[in-house]
Amino acid sequence: MTRPQRTIIIMNKRIVVVSGASKGIGLAFVKYHLMSPVPTTVYALSRSRSHEIDILSKQYAQSPSSQIHHVPCDLIDDNSIFNAVNVIKEQCRKDDEKLGIDLLVNVAGILGNNTTEQPGPERSIGSIQRNWMKTSFEVSFPSINYFQV
Ligand SMILES: NC(=O)c1ccc[n+]([C@@H]2O[C@H](COP(=O)([O-])OP(=O)(O)OC[C@H]3O[C@@H](n4cnc5c(N)ncnc54)[C@H](OP(=O)(O)O)[C@@H]3O)[C@@H](O)[C@H]2O)c1
Image (cartoon, rainbow, N blue to C red; front, side, top):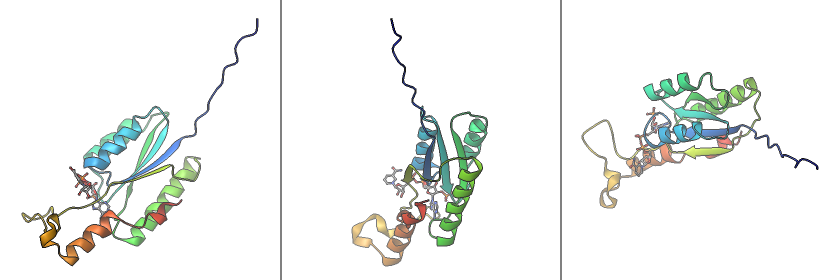
């Protein structure tokens, strides 16, 4: 009697980039992908490095499957996006991983002004102001062409 043949599937590591990763919805996506059964390297983009990102970085530092790298990036600054892409490319080389992003989760965004008591005029259509809309769109819809690593 012959033994049934077993198929071994070797899965490549996934490369996932999450913007707006330091808190809120972006942070939730970071955690979701780190916990995936598929080995995943998560590049977490935001201007600041939050306490939660620090904790996750320590937690996954020795993990044989998934990793997280925080990459500082300001999405309204083209040079900052360009630098972030180069950081990701360099890290992929160091980790001996394929060059190519499997998934870009572009969460970063702003709605209103978090720094004052004023919620911001773009929250209601009747009070939209050009400058507020411009800033919101610059953060929320940066050129994703940069991420075609
Ligand atoms: N939460 C909701 O219920 C909800 C509902 C509908 C729509 N939304 C929209 O979904 C988006 C995310 O919501 P959220 O609740 O997760 O917001 P959040 O908690 O305020 O998080 C925003 C994230 O975006 C990053 N960010 C902001 N400006 C940035 C910039 N210039 N460059 C790079 N990163 C930047 C922030 O990190 P740094 O400050 O460190 O850069 C942070 O990680 C927003 O556009 C929000 O309006 C949210």
